[in-house]
Length: 284
Length: 246
Ligand SMILES: Nc1ncnc2c1ncn2[C@@H]1O[C@H](COP(=O)(O)OP(=O)(O)OP(=O)(O)O)[C@@H](O)[C@H]1O
Ligand SMILES: [Mg+2]
Image (cartoon, rainbow over all chains, first blue to last red):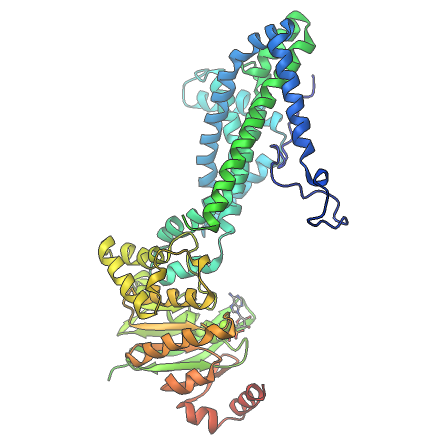
């Protein structure tokens, strides 16, 4: 079995377009630093890789054919990404509210969900949810084998990312100062109203950047769904490669497609983040 | 006159070991201004926070305007709407404009219309002297202005009593006066106030009564002159000797 890419999820999932703060700490930076010291060379290199791959796909017949065979999978990749993201946001929010609630049972159930998800490799979870849990649940409901493979894949990814996204929401909720809640309550707002009008609006702002990262992470992790045989991009690439033995054409075309998607999304996310932080700094 | 606030045998413990308030009794008349002073950790904030049930007392009874707020079936949300609270850290809502900060609870709790709430908000903003800041966000205001907005936000609810927990302690010195002036006006206008503060000038000018608290008990209370100039208890005297040295 090949290694299915980056199955362990890291929080540096997407391209980080923020200013580079990883430069050595001991070099003292100031305005007199030469421009080439702070210039984002890495961005240029990524762009060059993207352009070279793009030119190959556009003008080289082999890559061109591979691209044409793979690209129909884009629809399912996008569909799985968007559905999984939306569903996991909804479930994640419920889990996060449970985790921060006063209720001991709710809090502990929510915590166990998160810990279970985080303690198991994504690939294993995909197999387990899609091939064990979903079938037994649909069996139990008297509807054996009624869930199409595509939806098993989406359900698996949704349940997995619900655990991760719940943690993002929890951190967002807990980033809101206690004093905010006390101020709300002292004005006579109910607990529910305080959460709705004071805590959540502030938590959302804190949560957009990591949520955006997770959207991109989900997009990349849809490639893991190829193990279920659903015809998203990676599965189409694998099929074309094993049928034609054109591994180079297939996987470089595939690389090009994913890289285009993640770079575009990262740029969009950067714009949204900048918009949000301006909103926070200045008057509207 | 019937007391507006009646506290009987108030106790508050945190966990097993911390006995922050140990049997406090006080009656506060309508329109009275009570200043609570005492060393750090003596339980000042805890007493104040019990008055609007931000901390639930471990023992004892609190009655506000005839109603037992410590009764198990008391409507805390309604009671808190009647009890304004001003915090050391202002606690304005950063995602809302000044105007929205002041209208939010009016609309949700008092069920006022947007227009009514905005009229009341502007009235209170004018009272604290910054009507021109209605459209600003809290981060665009100085600390003193933020605290004045926080006061206006509480006043807009039409509270029966205002609680202040060290309202000027987080302010730069040059902004302390503008906030104290607002509070002084409020006191003159007949608002019932319970104020925790280290501003002895304010206490002398505004307080009907000063309470000295130490280790969770009210050691003594009296007029500002009595407490500051002729304390009866050694502990009180020691405390003022210490802070007046600075
Ligand atoms: N939520 C809490 N949990 C545990 N202990 C607490 C809590 N709140 C207060 N205490 C403790 O109760 C005691 C009284 O605290 P309180 O905040 O009422 O004092 P204070 O007089 O307001 O002090 P300061 O002048 O520092 O504000 C302190 O020992 C404090 O550590
Ligand atoms: Mg205090």
